[in-house]
Length: 247
Image 1 (cartoon, rainbow, N blue to C red):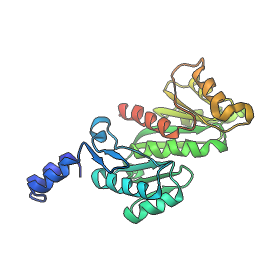
Image 2: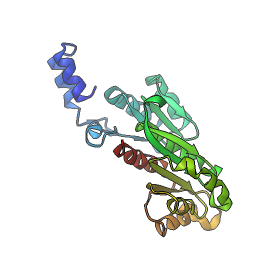
Image 3: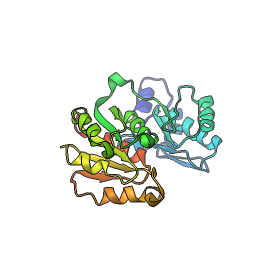
Image 4: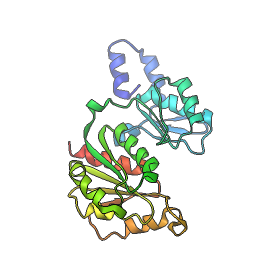
């Protein structure tokens, strides 16, 4: 329960002062031994702490997800396996697994309640898993999302035909591997910010996404922000923040 809700519950007699005091003890953060959960993050940033599931055990993921769910009613876990999801679902039946994005969510607003518009674009089909992580993240942050896939610069006519749709967006996430030129080309055509997400998709000289990252960082187009390789979460979160400011 959030601090504001807790105070209202005390005022309405639904929670005793003693119970409220017990909950307030762990409001700033909760020490689980293997993790310290930041319950104040939503108050500071507008969105609760996100679980990075990679490297966590199935049990750890389940426990953390349940604790955050009980406090905020809004939880996102990224880089999650199907096994981790099954452990979460036993504790939080409302949880949903997004297979392509490898994300677990609970508490996402229905589409009709989301605001603005974020366009998530990919250079190729192979970039979709990272793009889906970005899309799900932006949706969890309350943004409407339009997915526009496979408009890479090797077939420029595909991107040009999609521009009217992309121009409606407040922020654009450009997800691309290989040489990573999509972000530069889009930024040169649009008057809204472009968040460039390099992916590790590509042949040997791609160096696991490093070539795409360097292309995006060295872009001569303006209005581009660049996140780390395969960081769909970072791209989607930043786009949602920009989108929220424009409401």
